[in-house]
Amino acid sequence: MPDAAFSIASSENLDLFRRQILEWYDVHKRDLPWRGETDPYRILVSEVMLQQTGVERVRAKYLEFIARFPSIRQLAEASTADVVRAWQGLGYNRRALNLKRTAEIVCRDHGGRLPDSTSELERLPGIGRYTSRAVACFAFGMQVEVVDTNVRRILSMVAGRPLNTRETEDLARALLPPGRAADWNQALMDYGALVYRAKPARTGKKPEPFASTNRFWRGRIVDTLRGHDTLSLTELLHMLAYPNRDEQRVRTLVHALHEEGMVVYDVSEDRVSLPH
Image (cartoon, rainbow, N blue to C red):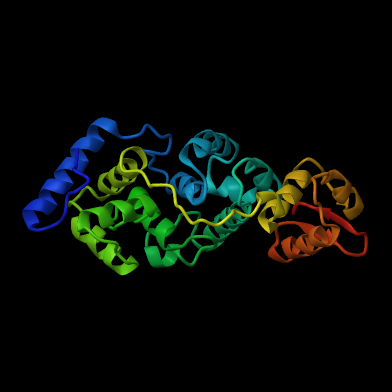
């Protein structure tokens, strides 16, 4: 197992570090349902789910989602409401909307096949630098670095000092073992998650109660609509029976969600629903 005090001093140290991490990974790698998957669409689903949600929560939801939408074309042809309902429990519902939009674009403009270049992937909704590289590496075998927070922490440890984004990516690229980019990137992620874990931050600040945030209320609005075809805004407000509910805030957020395409708000009828 690599020593936490390890620092880079020579190419021999780089080779030793690579070998130690890969040997550890061969024994301790996590058994995840998307590992070893060859369908780029399914890898994309897992990466989008993992963007802001822990592995254990994603594990079960990934299998449910793939069972419901086994191909990118079936996702593209599904109603947005069904996709948002299937996303329940993962949070950050905008990811579901972006994934659905990506499926539609891929089927319309790319013949139902995800592009294999990072630049083309990044043109799709909700796919940024990290996700594009993860899909390119894990789905298409490209020799590219994939840097998440776990990898950043480990490489700063290896370098012996905090690294900025460019330095982290440069070091990650330099460490890629020929022909084993996918194993290497996943090995670093697993090592960071299982062994070299992040220390809790000490900010001294009192955290804002989650129930007072817009994110909380946006999530509650969408969760409530999942169980109904349509609701009047008055009915929606009545069902949001949480302490400190702010009617004006809910109304403002409904309008914002409508503008984003997450919900449909009929002003004339004062009714709101998930998109069809």
